[in-house]
Length: 367
Image (cartoon, rainbow, N blue to C red; front, side):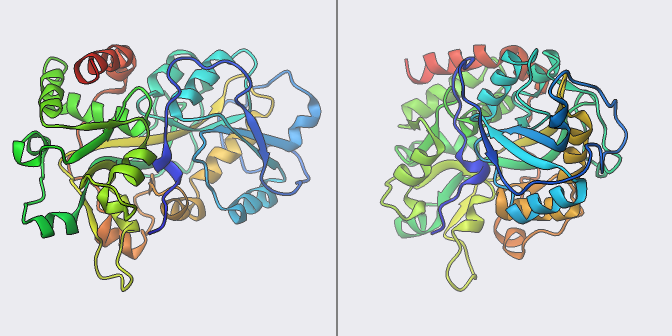
């Protein structure tokens, strides 16, 4: 089986993270020309940095950034800019770093702020208003500053072969997961250390409410749920469906994961996603306030919405494109459908209560 990376591998550094986490990666050759080629609209902004920075645009992102270098080359050729990428950790760490450095921004543009942390980024003023002219139909900006680039559903996955062999019906709902017949079968990830774990916590809050999610988690504890620190541990160590010796046939992952556990002849997937257990993550890009090259940042945000990039996201980031008109890989249509009705929690509510909810989860589940 192909080991997944991209957005699937998220872990969170709990709390603000200080220090030199930013590692700049020069992804492709040197461009020539002036900043601003390819930008459309927006505020223009200005920074106080070195004038020589006008030929470079720096993208601050999470560790799962994986855009094909051919697309990086294309951006550089079309814009006349050199793209540098600074990866600073998971979505939570990313926002923490942007807040801590907002008076001296780490770069020009950002990609990877998700809807669990978007409100904090907006409240702290780390991004400036910019709306691309090419914003796809149905793609909703946040605060006129965060532009959706991709999305994906965090859901429990099932090992179909294990359930068939055991003669046990595959569960469908969150309530099913607490049924005693599924005792000791589920592994999830810690919302304090894993972005999929936080998304699943939000799914349970969306389903059972702020006053009911603790009781639900208590029922999972009584039913033998296992908690891993990272998605990698849950999926590759504990999940039997990963083909690496795990013993639990239910694991928290993504709705897209079954597209990567397909049989050699491409006729079926050995795993499935429980589409009634999902929370939808949306990843945003934006122009960092006070950047040295706001025009270049705008051009980069525009580029991330082009059909070439949007159509590459399923294979490079394992996420759905924000542009719903972009064709998906054939196996995604069959094996990676999105949830019809994922659970939702308003971003402002997440921002206001995230730490409190994690603390309550920790007390209930870990004691």
